[in-house]
Image (cartoon, rainbow, N blue to C red; front, side):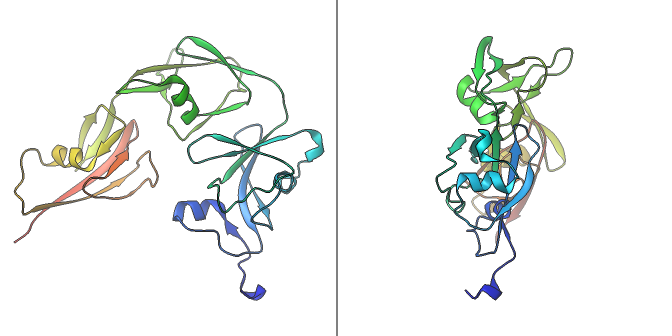
Amino acid sequence: MNTEELLDYDDLGDALREGRALRPARGYRFLLAQGDLNFQSRQVSDPVPLGRQLLEAGTLDPRDGYSLFAILPSGDFEDVRLNEPFDLREHGAERFVAFLTDRDFKLTLKCDELRWGKPIISGAVLYGLAKPGEGEAVFLEVPGGEDRLIEHGELIDLAEPGIERFITARVTFEIIVNSRPRTVNARTVTFEQIVQLAFPGQHEPNVVFSMTYRHAASTPHAGELGAGGSVDVKKKGTVFNVTRTVQS
């Protein structure tokens, strides 16, 4: 490609959400945070930068002793070595976080005290550690208030004052199906389950259903759902619209 035809930049987040490869560009934008959840847009000129170049893009000096991690779509943290190349085209990571600390952070999970080596922990990691049972989820205890459901893809700041306490408990999810409130007992719902909520009972072979959804917990957050498909719902507010068609 001629240099005149290069994009000024391509955005890693846009590429991930659109399910495409990075485009040839003069720069590649990513998100970088320093020890918290305050992610800022940064840019590098090489799609395969060294870890230290990612830090330098955020005006951080690698000589100060930073550790750098890529946050994968699963919520896991991948160590980014400062003197080794990190291929932005292959890892599927948009967010990076730099830590300048050797401190351990305390939390309790199902009454057990744990120590975590980073000031941020992901919902995916908490679910992996807690191993909740069928129909259960992980919650952050809120003294004097309603415990907050932890989503797999969210990040929790452990550097806040106090010790975060996480528990597992049974959970119900309030969804809207064809403008009517419904309750389900699992985060993941299938096309067939939603059809039964919208149009209960047996259906003739010539009856066809189409379905759209929005405000889902899984990615994409909105779209169409087909037979055999499933989607993760939020604790409250995921909306489904189901249309019934009789074929002649």
